[in-house]
Amino acid sequence: MRDLFRFLHRIRSTLMFLGWLILSLVLLYNGNQHHRAQAISSSNAVVGTIFSWRKEITDYANLKEVNRRLAEENADYRNRHISAYTPVEGVFARIQDTIRRQEYRVITAKVVNSTWHKPKNYLTLDKGTKAGLHGAMGVIGPSGIVGVVRDASPNFTSVISVLSPEIKYSVQLRRTGHYGLLYWDTNDPLTSSLTDIAKHARITVGDTVETRGGDGVFPAGVMVGVVESVEDQPGSNYHDIIVKLSEDMTRSGFVYVVEDLQRIERDTLQQADEP
Image (tube, rainbow, N blue to C red; front, side, top):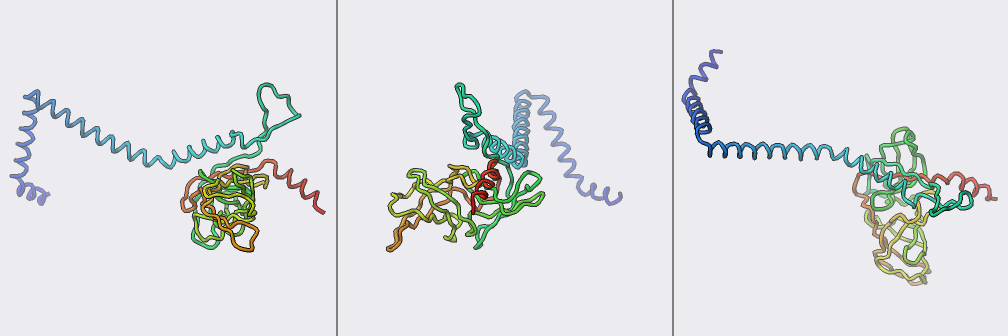
């Protein structure tokens, strides 16, 4: 306490100056309408700026929750979109509309870990079997296909990335309808190869590549990318096509896991037809 008094005694001149300054400002504020108006205006501006900063910080902190809600809304939209349903004929009478049965279900998940610079790349999602995820389900992003579920635990899922040569994807050219296989052998996270397109097919740079559907993994018409280059090697019956992927595989965010609701029935029938 003695040190405190000693310190205050040393700065007594400064304290006295501050005291007189505050007193003069108070007298000026109370005795002059113009200065009072200016002070109120300045204080309102300062308070408004502080509140604006606080709002920006709060909005930034809430971005995670906002993104989660947007992803869930997008999943609900995809579940309601016409591409997730198949026409039902002969079971119901059609009156001024078409009754459709849901063919695909979409589940929202978030990427918690991913690679894109390795020879074989994978992703980890924050949902698993508790959310209905299982092997061989397709995974798509906001702009295109991402990969296929390899395995799932109760709370997490491992996904084989489209940037992996382990899986070839059945795709087609939207303009011509010619189909082939998407195969990652470019070692470039932005591109992939499209194989088994015969040379008689007229392919041009910029053609849209999309999923073909019917494989129990992806619905038909999901964006894959656009043709970046087309080359013809002597002695080969097929084009050498490079596709620029529409989905940026170097980013992390929310994805949509697609479940084919008719896959079990179709696979059972196909297995029964095998010799």
